[in-house]
Image (cartoon, rainbow, N blue to C red; front, top):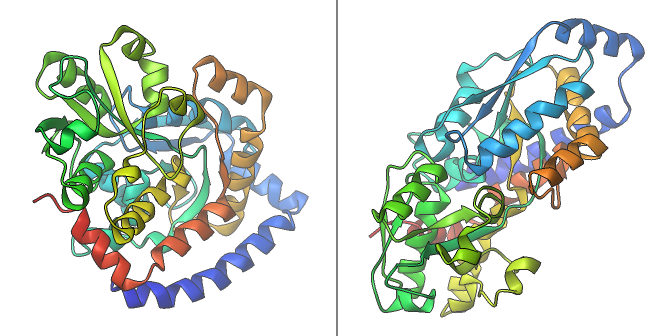
Length: 355
């Protein structure tokens, strides 16, 4: 799909989204709720997770799976299903095309997979991100670059002078696209090794000395899964990859990678790429799911985000629920990004290519 087509479809999409939001806000009748409860009672919803087990998306996906069923009429069971591959495109393609269209498949997607039709190889992507039914996002993501305490660099600035080998999951994901962007715009000397299923496997590779570190990883995953890494010196945080510093990272005197941008154009490209982090954990359903069931799942998601038990579970696991989005907010944000002017999109696509 061309950039011009996306911009034209954005206008149509914005109108359609407004109608859906208006319908959802008016609420469903008691009879409609009873019908939905009857449909979901005794059924199971498959929650597709785009990563391997143990990573950040897996942890957040399973957190949602433990709680959202309580807020859906009929209280269906929620069954997590890991579906890693192609930097999240495999999961997105499954939810869009292969999965059930009756409201029994819910997908957690990588933000980059949502942007893939615009920034990636359009010939290989068989879904239209504007057509997903957006359910909501659990949090805004905080991305980081870190290296082993034994790596040949101790700061991001050092990567401008010396080669640093980084583990990555695949082209199209932040662990590949971010360092490629730094090489092209800033002159860093990152060497990216692709092929790891997820952050769990990348972490093991760093510990074994196969690679020096990784970029495009989650701050919450490090603090939750490996709280000892930084205090012990096992890993060293060298940069944050976001539009603004996380309060806890700011205390560590770690810079934003955008601080190393050499030109206003480079800063503009970096800001666009990082704008995806505002919807760090997006959940979607297929385009064909009936509107009344989408409205119910959206409401269940929003109610879950305010629930005491859900928040207590997240806090217990040290998982941040920061700046979550409703389905309506998420849909508008995605549509706005997909309507980005063609000249900027071209520059971004060139910047994230590994050379």
